[in-house]
Image 1 (cartoon, rainbow, N blue to C red):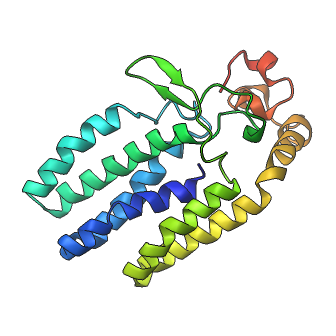
Image 2 (image 1 turned 120 degrees about the vertical axis):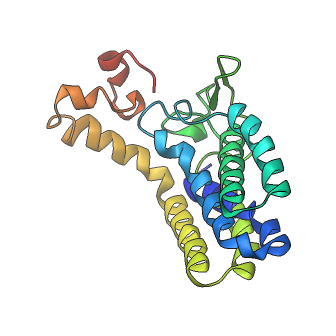
Length: 215
């Protein structure tokens, strides 16, 4: 799933807090947003492996959530929502597409790496791929209750996330061709080899041969 969907899903996790403990609503929404985004910071460094922990994030989120419920403070609530959102992100990526450059072709058997079991989890493709129409629809569904609940900067954050989702979904199908043109041609001839080896191999037509690494 695309990053805006994960961010909105993380914020949606904070909706119960807004009704049960409104004094912690702002920190919960912010932590949910950050936690929903955090795993994808590994986009160019072992994507869906370096910062995606479907088992460990969930294992940490459960006690953190219990502590926040029993002893609510801005810190405990924020940490719980961060971990819950990061766990949700790591798990739900399994239900999208794989790691291939064109995930709608369904050629990859890798969705998320399970560090606990030491193996890749295969993509289920229930949501198609990141930026697919179903992914965009999910972003809209998640944004609706948030817009009805939050206001001010948080509302702007939700609407901005939805706007990014629309823009990304609109151009998603042409992005692979642009990436191949840039990194395999224009930038590929300008960038030093040491930098090219750090790019995901799927961006380069001969990337697998250059790096020997499937990222």
